[in-house]
Length: 417
Image 1 (tube, rainbow, N blue to C red):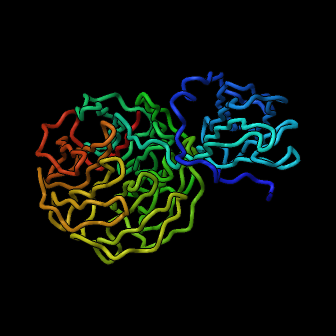
Image 2: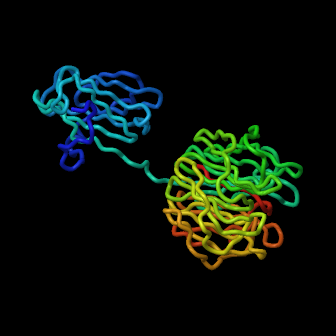
Image 3: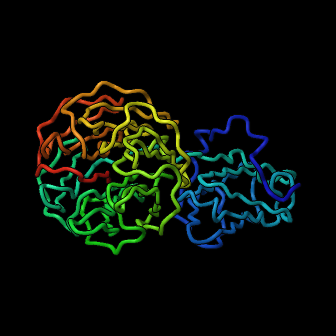
């Protein structure tokens, strides 16, 4: 025996029988570094802060059952060790090391008698957390003719609320993305005098916090997106000249120092999530003109080199996710304002142009709402606007909705829950 119990070779179906599920008593969450298990019980094991050594009963009857479940999907960092306490475990005596260390794992063991002892009839990994989106959204900041810090909440049915008095430094051209699974962050921008790197956190109730001192290169007209299911990234933008610098955002909303840029430096681009845990930057303008190139972001926040662009090259567009695992780029300017859109598959592949719907405009923002839908809002049609356009969970853009709130352009938007 290798000393580590791998996936159980004896199980037939990997499904817990109904009678077993009904006969076990689920206990309160275990967070300690040691515990003693009792037959007939099921345990949530939370290893967020430490590994856990579990001692099994010193005696058992044929058919006794116990379940251990990874409560917070942290066994990959801190796992569990099972001490079989004098009895055999899968045919080996208690000198063998029995470890489980995969995020999202469940272990269901049954005592079979003295020869083989405890046998795992299920040691299955839940590969992914359930795919969900955020219910609500928020548009914030922008330019009304002067820089603003106003915000407008978006309900879970895509209804934009009236203005909320601004919090934090008024600015235009910031960006915003989700973090922590249910919160958001506005960051960077131009305050009318200088480029800034300050950020403002958004709670899971849509409340914007006061300024957090900026980290990273101050800049504006950059793009944001989520990655890794609960983290974010700010990337590209201008300091007066286009850059490709990026800054990661932790799942606690902490912005990291600059990461050396990858890909062609540009500004006035957009970004969104795809595939549930990855992101994509796309379009924008370089010193040479508008482009349609894209750069994929891995689920570890690593930006890839340029991918040849698909669709009409343009700048000052917006992007967001929809349908849980896909994305959409929309609107912008080619030199003339546009309402074109380009869908992004759950593999990060950008599709050719979809004929525009709604009023052509640039310098707008977009976010998710209602778990799996999206909304484009505000922008400039030749003058500042508060128009919005809903996006269905199939990526279909709807006609204009009359604007609510103060008309402005170059705002930012993100979702929250």
